[in-house]
Length: 218
Ligand SMILES: C[S@@+](CC[C@H](N)C(=O)[O-])C[C@H]1O[C@@H](n2cnc3c(N)ncnc32)[C@H](O)[C@@H]1O
Image (cartoon, rainbow, N blue to C red; front, side, top):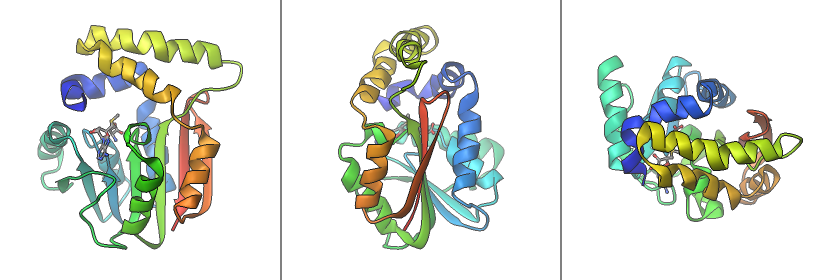
């Protein structure tokens, strides 16, 4: 499914978030204290979070994803703007090919809804972080509050329509709604992160409550 949305992935992202996805990525990277860090962007997709990490001064950022077509798109962008700047690795978030304690920070954007087993994934991300390392997760979260109905309808109806019109793909963008409807709320995600061994777990909502940014320390 991810391979099928690669060509228009960035465009649909910008359209459906009204361009706010860039701001959320900036926020996510800033929360990871990136300056001089060795970082992993897991589920990097087309590499946007990794490129933002570079802009904010990481020393090294590795982008990893299990979808090779996504990595090829990220590689094409890196070759264009900054050759060799982001080493890319094909890997599953639940079984990473990195030694214990390899990274100062691990970030991910719009990954949590997609992994088979969230507790195991958090445990694996914890394993590859050094003690004191930072985890930052950016993803959609079930909307709540007064705009809940409107936002739910936007995600259920407008986003798949954009998917059809811009990317010619209804299913992949309807999946966004389906995955969100079974995704645990932000408190529950925070509890899972804590259970995986992290401390100082906190989160903030943005995007009218549709997006959560979780931060934790190993
Ligand atoms: C919605 S895209 C997000 C891409 C990028 N992080 C961003 O901010 O736009 C989700 C990405 O997660 C990847 N992904 C999903 N499950 C994964 C897993 N278990 N291991 C590695 N990558 C995974 C997909 O291949 C896809 O590239």
